[in-house]
Length: 267
Image (cartoon, rainbow, N blue to C red):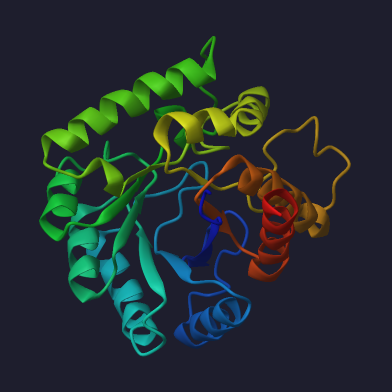
């Protein structure tokens, strides 16, 4: 029997993220949000201090570290069951945070931004989520490929081989096809519809569609306050498909979606 899907609670310590920029940049607000997520059932917290929305600007590593470390320190005072993930493209940030208590790095660039990332992951025997961030994303454009599944397969196959060449255990690697990062609406839909393909091929998969308008055609008449409903529906489908991590903003709604999916399809 497969394991139940884990919710990876999003904590953005930025002023310009996709959907909650600035809301948790103050430590007191971040702390309150952490408490709420944990109360709602979250056991994995993904902390990011650099936005990767279209047109994003790089944030210096020392600034990211200064934002993240107080949050790690607070999390370490809580239950030992809470796992800490760091959303960063910087090996310097990854190294410092792993030394401070994080156990997972979520690199949306798939280490393409920083060639030292795999070395740091190996040194700490950490887990890593490998994303796919084409250059077109920064210009708010989409890659033009004939088959997004084949493109992502070639990309992840090569990336995993590179990771293994650094001595990283294959079991430590999680792939994220990165919906909405430099991809067209049709490609985003194809990724979601075929998420089971990635689960069967790579076993450990993370999916993030929370609060994202991944298709202009589908979301034409959807208000922002309805996005959580869409996210929860996809969370249920992804959980049924065997996705290991769902990166989400609203823990309560998605927790219920995963619970219903689990009880329905494993009973």
